Amino acid sequence: CLALAFITYPLAFAKFPYLSQTFTILFFLMFYILGMGSNLAMISAIVTAIRDEFKSIPNWLGYLIYVIVVVAIGSIYVIPVSLIEILK
Image (tube, rainbow, N blue to C red; front, side, top):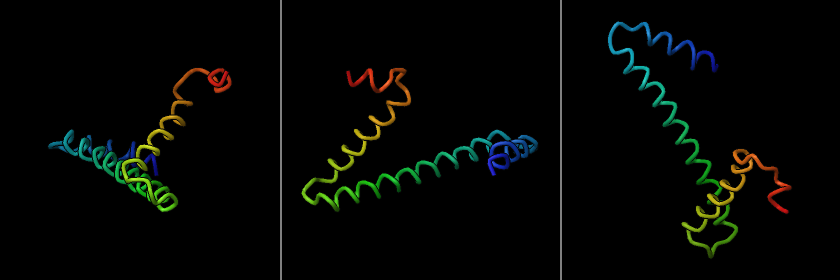
């Protein structure tokens, strides 16, 4: 499936006689928008679960909690320091 999406379709678009770059840009823009839509649905589901459990917190605080947790987890993958050294 990935070979079809990222190898075959761009090669086919490159062989179009007119506007091949436009179709290629639109194709990858479609993937970007699809990814953003999926991410928004995932975030909304998690924040809804947080707000269902803790009914007194406002909506913006649920999103803030989600962002802080995701950035903390994501920083493990981008910081070249082990977790043990961080916690010392």
